[in-house]
Image 1 (cartoon, helix red, strand yellow):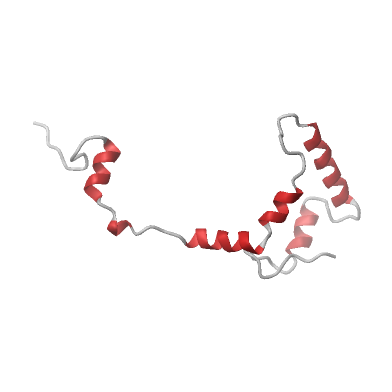
Image 2 (cartoon, helix red, strand yellow):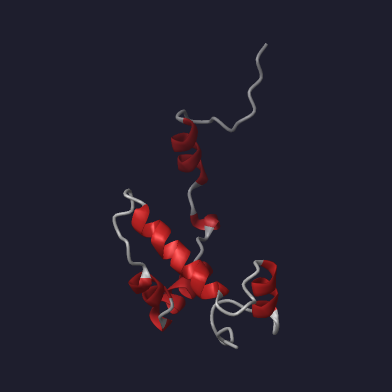
Length: 105
């Protein structure tokens, strides 16, 4: 039986592959191939799909460079303490002093 990849971006339980296959009735021999064939036939019938073959996308998404890029983009953040709050508030609401407490008599 196939194994889930180790050391990738996602973490898996030891028996997760078997649990998922059993959940979706894919644990019997030949069911996965049948499901993939049905999906490929359905994709070919969809006229609004411009791309009919998705194998190259899956290969690209599983490359080490893409995984490293995803890790880097997930760790990226902005330092909000360096953002000028007055100018941000003015541009956000459209008038200066929008977040001040106003008293109307």
